[in-house]
Length: 285
Image (tube, rainbow, N blue to C red; front, side, top):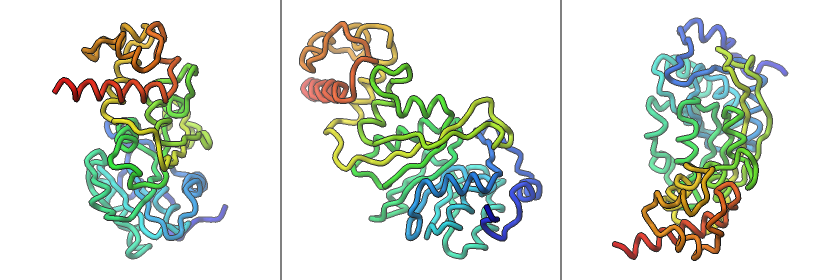
């Protein structure tokens, strides 16, 4: 594949700005512009799109998104060492790259976007990847401010996102993702693609929001799944006692066998449990 733009190679950018990856920030830089372009293409069509990118670092994925036609890229970067490198990209693509120096966990997308919808495309910092995804899956109101998430995770986390009931990886993350999105692993990325190389393979996952997911209280669903999978080897009649409710009655009302275990319950079953739990909580107030 030809060079995507006339900016310097990423290795030169990293050297010039002294951008050694910080483990404390969960950084692993992608330097192969062919690979960053492949990730960007997974979010096509980009023409006319607004894209939010988390943790752009030296800007390899940022450059691919802009070169492939994204009208507006909002890059959220906590590492202030990378800002100067991103500003060089902004100069190459006038009025199309907005740099937000801050923590993505505190970023208010709706305030930034107004009525506009965006998509998120990111090589997520490993140390906040799951927390960010849960925030995006449980955002209110729904439909969300994004129309697609194209995200890189450690392979193990990606498997937990797309797992189905009965799978070894099926857990809280799969329930939350399956409740509100359709998720698919698109391709894997070897450790050698990164600097420094992580110890694990990574995977790119695409999540598309469901227009009308099952009605459910997001907070209640999080609490129920935390309790159920927090003690996943126990029967639900035991693990749900941590909710400080009559677990047997809760399960009976949800039409779930008290001897079942969390990995045996589909998303629809957890939604029923969460709705009944939320109703009981309101009744006690």
